[in-house]
Length: 517
Image (tube, rainbow, N blue to C red; front, side, top):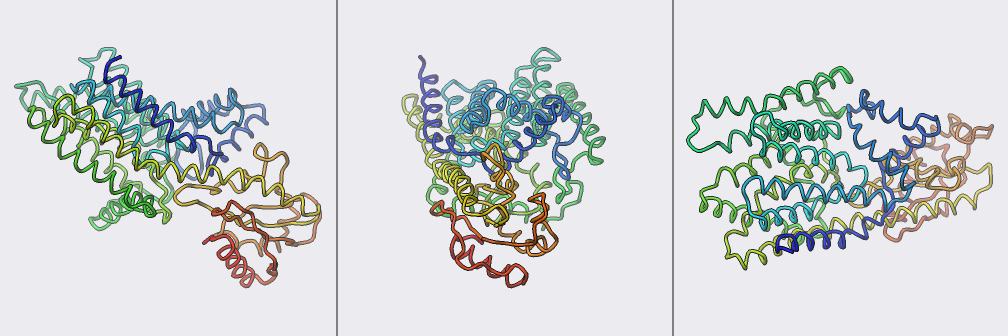
């Protein structure tokens, strides 16, 4: 086995080992919404037709999501593995490893040797902010989008004219677009590749003409995709309901959105700043060293400037879609489509040293990223371990309530930067996560929704949930403490008939007993 292959095996093994605890975690947040869709389609006897229909329909109103490809993989997971979280997580992580191998392939297509390609793969595999995509199965949209982008770029670099590689590049682009909107910058990546990798002596006009010939099919596919989006959603570019990318951005707004993007890693590493600084230092040092190496080898444009340009394009393409910042640090997935190009830009740094030392330099760079990634993996492992504790205790709590009783359980939206019960309040209390439906007795509630419940109870929601005549009532109040993974019952039940007092008392209970905001 060659040194590069042995090193790649080492990096993959190390990445899986440090991720294992997180991979063993329970489904979280949006995962349960996906499960709800699959269960509903299966119950209606239209499992596969409903999934295939998403190739010509949106996914999640009011958002303008066109993401049918991931649904195919979710359906296969369900049919093959049932509702086993580990199996679903391993499927996603397998795609992450495939993406790392594709990063190495792109590096080789750029002319790098096997050791630099392996270094790029290791850096991508252990990218510190990757777990929001590589661990969370709801991040599979991003995984598959990046798979398509990498295939498109790799094949584009190999293509000559409209050959089989050009066709593969277009197929990769189509795959990415069917996975998530994050693949839309792909034509820009291809244009940069054609412009910055010109044959020696090629004039500017000839370069422009060649770029047009090489990239026109992808650009044509891009506009066809925009036409499909406009037909489906009435807007070609808008993805999120609170962010219109067609709105002109002033300098101040652009700067604010850059700060929003930069705040994500700062919040993720707020309780482990040293690990974040190690990763940042590795990026800065490697980029500087890689520039020196590329200039020394007279390949500055094609092997360093091109990946840097790809990185910047990937980051800038996010700005029109960013409108809010999550105070808890969610959003690392936005960086996943940037990670391949950053890894490609960093990897040539090992060329600053002699051959024997390059292996050590490669290991040190990947070790720096791995060290930083252990923090984000620990955050996901913590949330993944808290979820089964919550589900078990919710079921146990209902056994203390009689059939007419009704209770609320205030649960965390997030644990640190990790989505927890957001979009899954019903899912944690229903099959397949529970043996029976707990909702007629106990409803999980996010802290921000507590204030709505006095009016809902008064309006007869308890009877509606129980599906029988029951007078408005609230018999118990719980909250979940993620520090100890304990469901705590309030010793004094606030009076729901006094809405403001109830909200204040319930929030005070959640804050003091369970450290919920």
